[in-house]
Image (cartoon, rainbow, N blue to C red; front, side, top):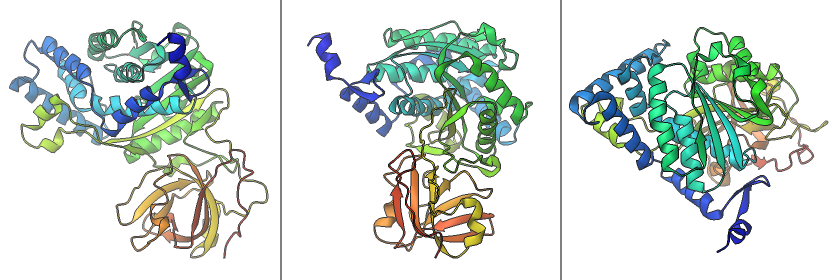
Length: 455
């Protein structure tokens, strides 16, 4: 088959320029159905451990020291203390416990960027606070799997041990997967001390992955200033990714930081949709995505053999993220039409124990269980969290109504019951058998309904 025929066979996955074949798309979706760290990356990590320790990667002494490093890191994290990566085993513990999940996690985020038309055939990527290079490894792996697109990768890291691991892993992974990704020499610097003019210009994708939460000496406003300052190097149509752990403290702080970045002139592309044209209050905005668990790596399984296996198996993917832009582009351009009779979430106190019509974005997966399903929803106006609740007793088509919807989709609710949860100072929108739930298909607001405000 000629090169021209192969190009004609391809159909756009996102945008008119970046083309991924059906086969490439299916390979990536199959990866997400059964996610695991590819063997070539596992081998690179194992080889690095052996070079660093001069022992076999699964030597009992090596494994025991990694276990200790992991336990210390987890303890400091949950105490809200700074986690250090100044020593070899601290980085080896990170590679064993955190990196596998973060690698697959960023492939999900990069796929979202591609799927929504934000990627380019060739991208300049800057990973700010790269650690041992998990984000570049994810870029290398995904582009190789889909067989389309190329990138030049720049990275910034201050830790000497992380820097060494990056240089051992990332260039070798890029070489193993062909020539689609060119890895530039990483910059060793504390991101707080960066001279913006020294960074590459016209960056298409700037990534802050699990890094802003580590700047514990900086207030929210200072973190926002940092991101906005570095955004000067972003291409006019470039994208910033901010991703943090899903726990309450970090996920909420991330939303507050992103909201502050918005005040500095950038636009939140997703997941936030300001459908009423008002500014939101993110102080209690705890929202995150959850994806399929990964398969444990060989290293993870060996670490778990020493007892207390649950302490060393880290396979669940939960994260809080946001995409920002300089060009004003948003995932959803929908705004509630003038005169539409939907209740704002900020007015729910006026409608307790009544059925009303609302419109909101779905910003979580199921936070409940298989019986009582709970989904966080947001319309950008509420000070109190709001959840859509499917009771355990509900039967019929509404029971699985959210299964086909994506994170960030805007949904119209008709005849939903408002209940106040005093224990959590939050509102529940209880789905009834007669509740109608319709995704908003139009992006400009003209498709919104005009049902009664309350009954």
